[in-house]
Image (cartoon, rainbow, N blue to C red; front, side):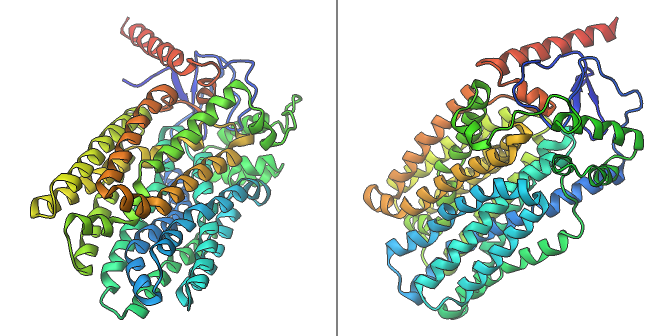
Length: 527
């Protein structure tokens, strides 16, 4: 049976009825401020109508992530024809591929303050607009320099979108499904990658001057759908309360909760946590001053959030996806059509296995999936390095190379791909959440850019196989990082997650306490 010590509040968050929150918690969360023995006698589960509404919000908020995925996927093939058409050097190729990830940090950095100023919803709109402009410039670019300018703008748009979607979804989702819903952006990234691969394959037969432009132009379509989505999705009720727009927040809650009394109680809790109706106001302090001089609890949150974001990328996933044609060429596949067809298999593996993560993330938990993912990636990366180094260009080597690349992206999608974004959106207090998520996204994008911009040079220096041995070693380090620094957050309210970071071994102590509570409850029910 599940933990009956949990009770579901009006918006779906779970409270621990018998476990007090630490009173000395420095950061107040917006989601709820629950008394130790606070009960809602009239609580009930969300109806299918409210569930569908929240699901629709999560889907529409995730559309920006298609842009990132599509760019990653399409550029892996388009770069072949860009090189042919614009006669760019290998260094220019690396810069062109990697600059989007590096420059997206500008969008992510701006995203924290932007989303606090104009709201989560309109930050998503701004992200789509900036990307559209960048994609249009890339499509029409006559020279490498103009193409690079378009990539920079597209990168800023992607940086904005990639940090705000998980924050928005976490703030509007019920706890029981928060992990699955917050994973939606990763699903759409994978879908975008697959669409990019298919676009490469579909347009590769056109003349080299035309095909890569059409490939890049298709990326504008998802951002048009985002424009329509803005008429459907609401603003985050938590942000609305922060801005003292109480009636607007009530209106949003009425769409996600089907009981008016629950709405009022939920609204009161959010106001209390936001410091709107509480006598004890949140200590007014710049978020960046908090980050530069963090409390021990915030320091642990930053290590966990920033660390998992960096490990997601320095294990080489973007290099594997961006340069999969290069990897397969090194394995012995020749001809553009065959290379691009092999990349479609990679896209299918990456997209298919993200669905496994969505099903399991709120059942098995975040940490088991991270272990499965990082250990599996370590094995696949090592075996890929071995295959490329020792098995030559024969049929066996080609088959194994495709198998290990598909295995690597599959294990990535099962765990660290989606879980990294879920954790970043869960572990920080509301007052710091948007800017902390922005900081995590910066770490993610910088790591991605460094890997993407150095992959070809490093692989030329130590071979492609040798490069994957390095990725395998880094992936092994990520297993140790997960063990040491990542707590389990499955089934916990956002307040409880925050309490896990209050002392150095807080998450282990809390897990023991929760296990004890479950056993006690089970025994009581059996009596």
